[in-house]
Image (cartoon, rainbow, N blue to C red):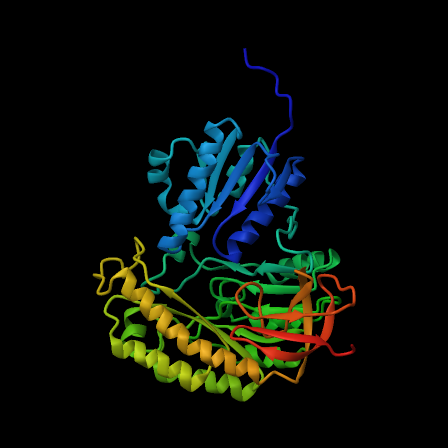
Length: 437
């Protein structure tokens, strides 16, 4: 006879990968809570009996981290510390059959769009009335806000459409409802995320509606900062920049992944844009908004990449002087059009190229930071660490960009806005004091 259960279920959600995954986990948490199920994010205490792992399947390193995390939790289950282990997210979407065979200790695997099925595993119902309801896993003063799902682009290296499907926009009304709810709970900064921000609205409004969305969100009382992540450069709508210019609470910040600058690489990657068009686009954006901070990411070691291609990219960085740059190495993704292309570089050579490119950007970043010394900036406080406060200017997003290190005798709290005079510059961080001290 099955023994009577002596404790209530408690669920811990582990999120791997990007901010879009984080939002999915937060929505899942909100649904579980609404069904009376106790849930936490990334708990460091062994006080939960059910684990849900929201996986990433974007590149090899992310897949490896996801698999290792699954195996760790299955081992905890086998040792008697967990009753159930569930897996969801992109890795599960792509490799469900293989994972079920290779890791039978997992109780169930779910894809990226199977939230109602996850809830059924808990004998819970999906509550459609919970628009925007979620349990934040971020500090309470900022949040990510997903405005669409999926992607219609066909970049040869990217498997996101295979894992997330076609582009589907949320309605402006639903986004506004979610934003107002977040602001009512103390959120002061929202980061708009999507696989492709500039495509927003084409499916439901038959036009690129991001500027209209921005105008609407900027009018929400109590929302201090709005930040834009992941804008596609091809056919970039310049009225987005006009919308940023119209509103003081939209950060002068644009995250635009370019991936490369060499024409042969752009063509092989199916980016639908040329080097000349990218140079022109950056000039046009800066002409409209000279103070804008542009962040981008690039791929090193795509099949067929030559030394000249790398030199073209380094020249581009030196010429254009982007404010923020990230570089990751290419990995083959099943189902993409580049999957069958033979590797022309070893993993070590790819990493060397990535480091070479970043060394160029490191010098640029230091020079740009040094230009800020002596100037005063509005800074949001994120946390206190080792006796000093850490914050960000409007030109810096969470985790990926610069931090401002502040020494102050004042008692500050996360979410406070302060004026900081920059006194020292480093490669990727700034140091300063409160302007009124």
